[in-house]
Length: 221
Image (cartoon, rainbow, N blue to C red; front, side):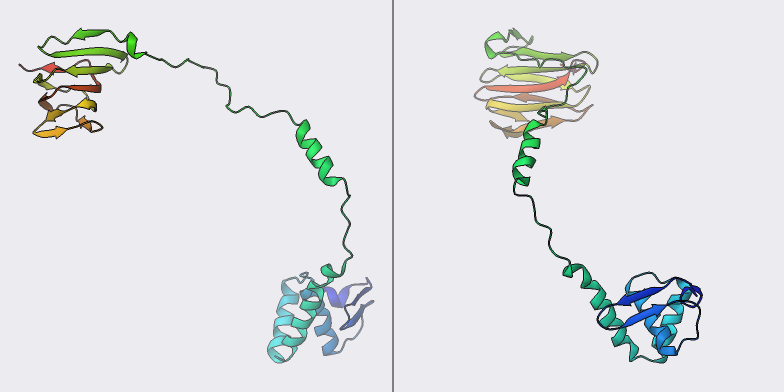
């Protein structure tokens, strides 16, 4: 073991014990425990030394209190060091360095900075949908997805004929009432129809809708 073979002189004075390890020498059992306990407290035991210390503690359980006292003393050494004073201008220098840092952009630059599409309400061009009392105003067409986002207006008593959805359809009621599959929807209500589903809709007092639907829907009547 290291504590039996080392030629290095090790002296540990912790107020409890003083240990000197020099050239190889015959040691008493309590001296061996003191060395092992010191190495344990310093967290430098190797595997064989750890087994030796465990065996000694099993043979003499009362040595456990001595080991605990030694570990407590070593743990307290760091707190005996004198405090290092902080420079009076440290905070000012820190804030000065922060102020000299370049500003961080609020958003990361992107290679494709496509401007947003804005359609003013006064610019919406209303057209007849081909059925009495039904008109629409196109907002955006996604040609790849074959979807159209538009405003749909039904006059009081207007009916939207039976049709089949080529894709999912989303409708948000902005004003008035809309009757779909026997359910009366009012302002703020949302309707989503699954692809392939069929229905017709009508209104009693008229309505204004925001709609996103497929341009491939099929009218059945």
